[in-house]
Image 1: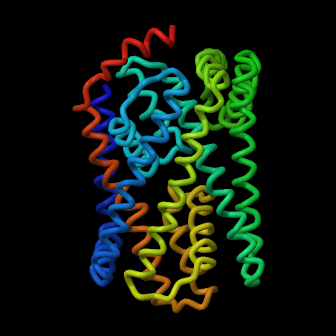
Image 2 (image 1 turned 120 degrees about the horizontal axis):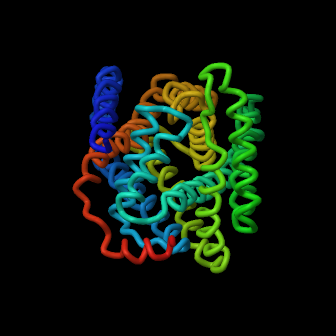
Length: 344
């Protein structure tokens, strides 16, 4: 069954790439026009960014009593990102990849899902810090729009929701279970007129909360273990800022730190606050508009947007397609027995 699901995901990925072939071709042609060593350095940093995501998950996993390798987690991260794009379902596809890999490697799927929540929280916190600087820059340049303000408020609200649920799990498995069950009832009421059945199980919500809370309690008992993944989350954003700066340099477009931070803030914001997976179509338009509002020509703005998205979105997506297949060839972690004992 697992192989069948992977085959379906790869097929959907192939269809997705074929449908976007002309865009990919434009990106490749655009990158070829840039100064090759700037582009090459940006590509290397993007690969390091993927490994840094794996290292972030490794640190979070370790704080929850799960031992895993950076290489394997880097594959899972890119595979989950690929699944979220080609089979969009509000992030459920990516979570399913993490949980499926957890079952195969004999550790708690619930804790793997919670690790994803912690990762997102830290990722949001890193972005919010940069975003606050970006908003100040936009205000000083009279470029702040109501759309950016609303999107920023939504991002902060999401971060607060994640923080609340994780803190609740650290305090009480029962309280977390009751909250998740209430959310399940809410979504069931919304979806029942359409699908005519219960979409989410309240009993499963309590089971999930109990298992997840054990990992969160372990995390709470050693708070210093959260410093490393929090630091790595900030370096993730720094790496992407550097990539955007290198794209400017590759095409000899004048840059300033303020422009880089403001444009990166807007593009990253709409990756998250977008109705399309990873902001496909939305980010391209928002970033181009932001660049032109900062007195960059439309042609240069299009070049920067295509190149930056090519490196930070399409390259990891292609990695993810390969990673999904490679995960099947990765053996079970020798520490998996210890992981399984912890989960009992």
